[in-house]
Amino acid sequence: MEAFFGVPVPFDKDRVRSTAELILKNFGEYGLRPNQVRQKIGDLLYDYDLSFSLFNTQAQFHFGHERVFVNVVNAKTAADAEIILQCVLRAIQCVDAKSIVKTNFQAASHALFASPAESSAFFAQFTDDAKGIVEGGRIIVVKEENWPGKVRLLFERSLTFPQGVFAMWTTEIAGPMNAEMFRQAVEMFEKTAERAGFEFKNHGQ
Image (cartoon, rainbow, N blue to C red; front, top):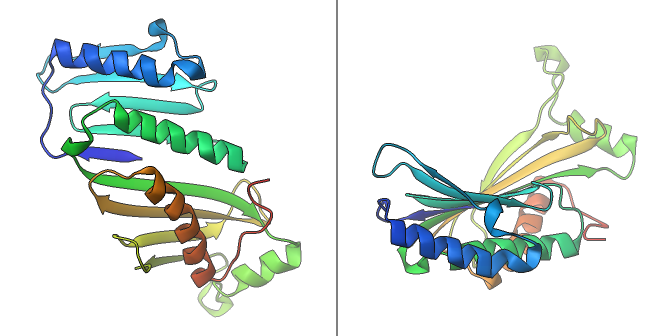
């Protein structure tokens, strides 16, 4: 997630201190300690960054002059997804949400087909032996009902799991996202995947 401020925020010692205090308050229950919050200050007025990581560096957080950035990897279950949701919401709570004018939200997943035959059949539609196209995928952009922005979906054969698919969803909305919108995004991404021809099963277990 990237939440962008409408106006770049110059370095201010008091603001950085108050942000750091909110970070410790919001993430302390996940084991975050004061010595794990890092401060980088460069030579320029807008060159600074507060950062920290959680869960053995699998969750990365950055607070700078133009955005709040959160990146979490290796989530596998519904419980993991809920932790990601809480992390994103708590990060937004560390800044003035009214100052956020745009949010980019991206999710990516590797998924396995039920069988090698299904994998081969699915990706066969993107090949063309006559033109020498032996691998392929697809990018679609969808305007889902009751969602404020477009959803971009890219999918191709997974490099991690040769008989699987790699899918990446990206959406952008005005302002900050709240808990309801994040949960709605999960359902919306699944609908977009169905439009592309595949359905997730046995996820969240």
